[in-house]
Length: 277
Image (cartoon, rainbow, N blue to C red; front, side, top):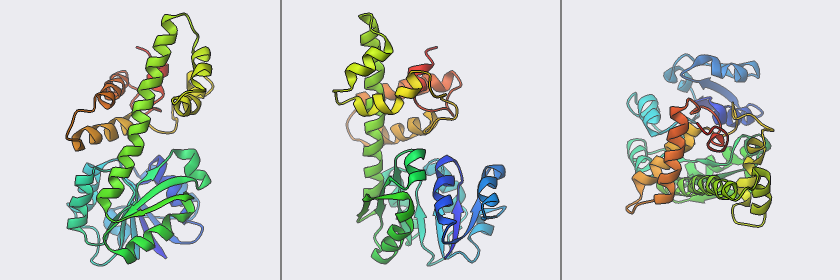
């Protein structure tokens, strides 16, 4: 198929790379040089979104957030009538409803996981849209980057968006939990390694294991896997969506915002464990 792929950031690049194996892919990114690795691997680069979608049979977006989707897609009316639009951007349920109303072919297909699972084809993917045929097409297109047991069709883009926010809420809350666990352990003279070992039999083991290499200094937070900026943005979407306070998420947001103030926003969110002040 001829596929236009708009947004070749860290995750978008990995998703588009899977498509190059079987499809003719034209890519666009606001910062053009970030699309160069895909061009080197066989993609065609377009200078504008409009140029990218010309003659496309499917359009995929992987942008930073809902405002970027509005700017690049909705305001410019860039999706041709009748062409399926698969949006992998993390957005709020309200934004997903807005986009579906603006473009009837909209399918929301956010991914759950970081760069390693993306490369290995083991991401979780919620695929939501009202048009079953287009939703089924989106499921097939997403298969190369999805774990077979984690490719989940749902009946609307808003449902897919909710699933993605729930998944990332777990990251935010667990990150805050590990941060506080390290502080508690330190108060009693425990090293970070001792705390990580003790967390291995707790519900925080997932986060402690995933971010342990950063905490131990075995990996640098730059570039990392999932940025402070991205998880902070997603966490704010959670708060904006909920009708009750989310104090654990808000505590995590405060941690992320502090890292942004320190200049670590484009680094891995494990910066909250590594960069103290």
